[in-house]
Image 1 (spheres, rainbow, N blue to C red):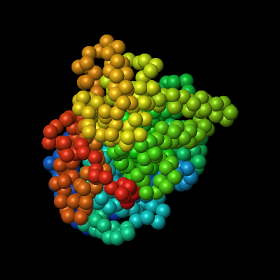
Image 2 (image 1 turned 60 degrees about the horizontal axis):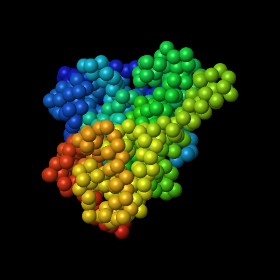
Image 3 (image 1 turned 135 degrees about the horizontal axis):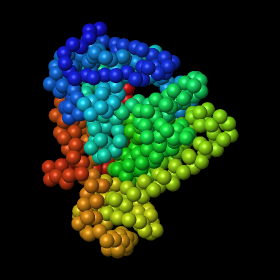
Image 4 (image 1 turned 135 degrees about the vertical axis):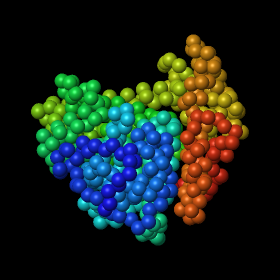
Length: 489
């Protein structure tokens, strides 16, 4: 494997590789035949301090394909465990490798990971490869989430490998370069807690604190503070998911990060018609990860994370358990506060009144009853343009609207301020599922990437109400076939 020699701007450190060797396996990507750059994130690359022009060259593409290792890289697969649909298992990076941590010109640290770069010691019988469609899906959705202001991993590049990958049929192989503040998962802690020592668990926790929460290093019980900080981040993250109708689809504990970033865009999708029971994932047959269940599952996952910290929360297990339970018990209230804040903003409400929650719930109840489009309903309220739908114009809606306007009239802030708040809280466009599928089909089946590029351009400014974006605001045509997503590999 050749070393990349041109000045592409890589400035890599390997702090994770300095942790105990049981946390990972050093492993190199499998070289591919003829890589081709499909899409590259110029703005993200520049913010990382990378040389955009050089990374688009043959040398840069070789890195994204795993054919060349940049100076300073130490490729490794991370070990982790996780509860998958409630069942605990040993896992690990089965088709991903952490190249290293890019130190930006501002001194920030970001993981650079190749996804789909070949088998690793944790592949568990898999081929370690990824196909083009799912890698482009992650690129589209993760960048859309970033534009929506929701914490997320980012996508730097997608390359095709020039090789086919066998799933149900032969599909074009691809590799995604993912950027994250870290890949520390709940499952990382579960792995060390289950198979490591208490001292190793402290090493991991200290590393996480130094990397993500340096302000708590001097706390009397910094491991308890770590738990509390992670709870705060997850409560805020899931409230943001709910506020835009995002459904993760596979909220296993190995797919939850302690940094509070959304990660692993497999069977994810955005809701069109408002329905709390909405499920898109083909493997979620019981609705465990339905839209309405996401806040509760977030708490369940946090409880599993808290369990992994028990050996270091307190030397007395009963006391450790009490500390963990007391912290977890506050999660739902904290989530609810975040959710109310998000929903108040969507309705242009400043401050707090006790009736606000009832006002919000009544609107959502009507939306579910009349199968109103989630995004477009709030967009219509924002611009005062009631859509020709079953809900608008009904007696119950008119009564609700009177209460809403009365609530706005009681606050000191101006109508203009209220509208500005709504415009910044209610996206005009989201990655509509039919639009994403349209882009993926054109790319994978026809080699036409213009549809995806146009979609990405629209999604880069989701709060703008642009006339030429109107077609991207429309929900899909009615269909007898429910939309399904799959855990793409």
